Length: 137
Image 1 (cartoon, rainbow, N blue to C red):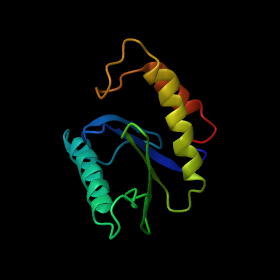
Image 2: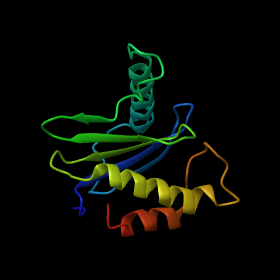
Image 3: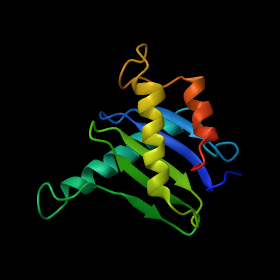
Image 4: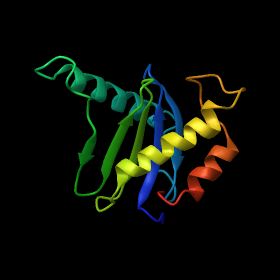
């Protein structure tokens, strides 16, 4: 089990495609191969819809957190439109800081990689390693 009770990390491109998913606390409960892609698209869509539903245009940043009895989802939208989500146990704390740390790791180990094509799936062993070593995960 992770230090901060993080279950998984998701990164979604500005166009809504799942570009990264890392299960931190054990195996994924998703049964089919396309389930992560469908859920990534669903998260992106709900975020966009919630932003558009604001009674004052331009004032909502979309869904930031969803809490249930069994889990919690926390979201961070970057200035470039990339969405970072963490799925965590309901009692997890400081998830905003965790997401900022993930964004910094992304910038350092993915964004600065000259071979990474933006908005394409992230396949970096070093990025995976740094996530697992992070004190916030």
